[in-house]
Length: 301
Ligand code: C5P
Image (cartoon, rainbow, N blue to C red; front, top):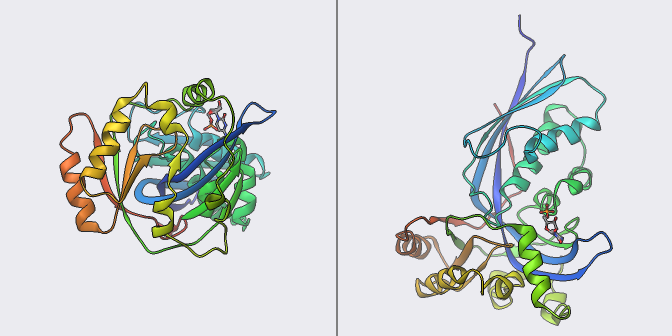
């Protein structure tokens, strides 16, 4: 008789950067960041099953262009967590991708965080999310944020995460132009272009966990350092931003280091209408989704 298994289902949300400042270069070669990050209702789905007995991690993925071996962040996250647990566990993960790859939407990072949250439950570890976030930091700069979803300030290399509450709700239109942006090259473009590091503005410095932040405030202070750095090479980003503003967005900006451009809309009907207008562009992926309201959640299967 096969060993009994346990299974959970997790939805891993995409993120957008409402503010992204790239500050000084660190001794480890990475840059210090300061970002206000927010999840949105576009989600990958993971089903995670464990059996005790043999040890191993197996991933099947809904899209063939994503490696399902040790190069995949999901496999790395599961292996990393298991390396902290001295038990022989067989892990099987089914990943259904909906978040576009290379889109600055943190899909792979969210999948990694969701994998660790699932295993924490399945193995009855009871570890606090802060411990999972600390363990996850080596996987990638965006991973620790997802343990503090839906909204947080992310600083340092990505590991200093402070949850904040953002009052109100907005709808977000995501437009991905159909090509992936390379994060490393984006940092290189940014470094090549600038002569110094502009410090955080007083308005950004004032944003903190107790400051009563609202969407109205955030819209006034949205900014992404990658936008001017990438604009000369990718005029499509400026074009999509303008198209979102023309379609009624209150604000529009590049997410992360691209290639997704997002627009902030006041409500669902205006977002859906904006998405319909922009979705006609050939080769583009577009979606109208609500801003995230909850942390990553698990469901027993
Ligand atoms: O952490 P992640 O794998 O997403 O980073 C990809 C690349 O982006 C890094 O190799 C580094 O060149 C650059 N990066 C950086 N500073 C950060 C995050 C990323 O310079 N805080």
